[in-house]
Length: 171
Image (tube, rainbow, N blue to C red; front, side):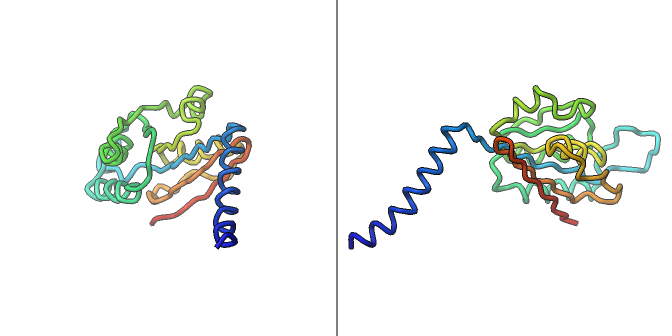
């Protein structure tokens, strides 16, 4: 019986030790989920701030379902209708406000500090989303998103100086 208890306690002890070491060295994990806004209304070529189409609204609800179990600390979006309308169902479901960010000032020291140790969703555009991913990663891994693609999900985790990134296509 003692041997069985010892076998159970050894992994538990190791897990606790790793947790204590990680916490004691301040190795917080920051997780970024980056997506592009859903399909926008292209009927008026002169409109620089269109709303989502019905298909786009449906995609926003799909994103909401995908992120149902993710515990977000913050949700960011640019000030455009299409990004706000993509982020809003997710924010409402998580009882969070959508915070606006300036796409010209991506991954500023203030943004980095405000999101450190948090789980964050950022809704951007075909050019700003991969650009932000590249800034967080610290190298150019991702190109602008094709205008027809609205299902890319970039997941980036930062732990100390270690950054991991993956791109999922949900098209």
